[in-house]
Picture 1 (cartoon, rainbow over the protein chains, first blue to last red):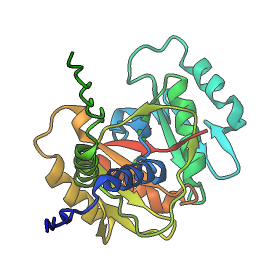
Picture 2: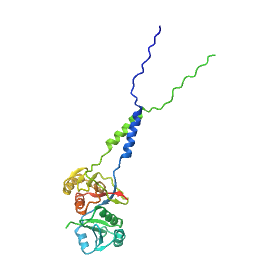
Picture 3: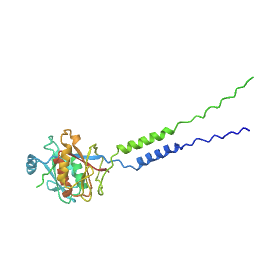
Picture 4: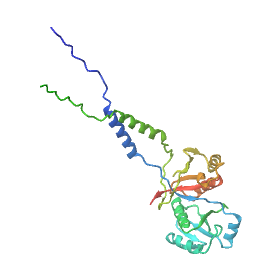
Length: 135
Length: 134
């Protein structure tokens, strides 16, 4: 009698679903990641030199005094929404960086949010931000 | 007459096995090339209209509790930050290479963040204030 042995199938691990799992992991990472915030307001802020401080004293350099509730240009209150236009007016005709310097004098209660809004307005108006020396 | 039976054509199939290798390669690439952010406290960035973009390699952070750090390493004081930054920036002449990303909580007050400005400026850095877009 002819007895044929059945061939036993070769054992193998099914790998095909691994690709689906891997792609799902990639998509999860892509969707769940928050990419680093890169938007910036750049400030190359030199400390006010002696000439600028002397200029400020003789009212040639614009000085912005800022508290949390009020912004003043050379002692006169200006609403934050008008700050850019007011500084642009004052800088009209001034060409050199030295003349376009704007000093910010912040008060202790000034928050970072408000400070960056003021600096943004000054930069948009064409001013060159200068750091006021600590007294 | 002999009629030849048509040979059974092999079923056409796309080889998908290598797709798993490609996918895992991509995962490893992302994992190795990512730098995870290291923040100690809570941080809400200020809001401003869209500005420039920075590609700076250094990040100074000041969270809502006043913890200061440079590239995830805690700094005891602005003076420590200045020293650490100076050693990193020394020798760089291009202003773009001297940019320092400054991440600061929007509620932080002037008396706290002002010394950090000075530390970055004194170390020769150009401050790039990181903000969210309005």
